[in-house]
Image 1 (spheres, rainbow, N blue to C red):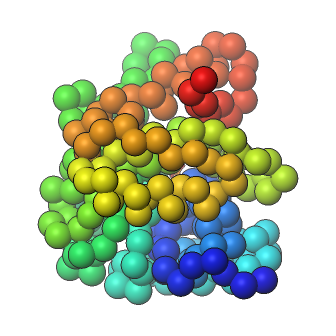
Image 2: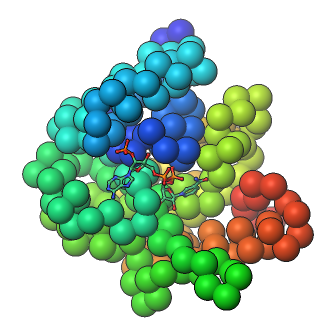
Length: 217
Ligand SMILES: NC(=O)c1ccc[n+]([C@@H]2O[C@H](COP(=O)([O-])OP(=O)(O)OC[C@H]3O[C@@H](n4cnc5c(N)ncnc54)[C@H](OP(=O)(O)O)[C@@H]3O)[C@@H](O)[C@H]2O)c1
């Protein structure tokens, strides 16, 4: 099967659930590599992703993936260390970087945001000077991404500091199932968007709804 676009997408942390699921879905439209801090882990995940997607998914270290790609999705846990981001910064200069990161803690039996008054996306932008950093995919459950029979008719709130960057991210989002990208404001608005995920998980736990997402009606 041929691909729709020529852009190269790196899933940094693509050995984890979200990055792996996005790699599988995006492989239909883009040249995709899974990035890991260790190459054998990336290679193992890439073999599985290729099997599932029936499209080739490549493997690189996170550093090599950042250098290779046009678009990087930072599918890493909340608050990746400044050293880790700093090591990728020169390679990501001038590129589109999408943060799905949700900085979350468990507090008194409920999930809450761990960075009140700030967002992971803003921290990423500060650590990656010259990159076009945007926020997206915070409410897309990894468990649904790997179920390829699922349409994924969800809305995805996208934060970006310009309409041009929003349009770039919207193209990526639209290539995954039936996801609908919606502009949620500049990067600073990611503080609000990141907070939706712990709320969704709390609702899911209290009402026994598996892997919820959002749709605005
Ligand atoms: N899971 C979901 O359904 C979901 C949905 C929406 C948003 N998110 C957000 O997306 C991000 C990824 O989620 P996930 O569940 O896939 O996370 P995860 O499995 O905990 O981590 C993803 C990958 O990040 C790498 N990693 C771990 N610690 C790191 C560190 N200190 N520095 C750099 N890389 C590190 C690891 O890859 P290597 O060891 O191979 O390098 C790991 O496999 C999180 O911020 C999460 O909040 C998740």
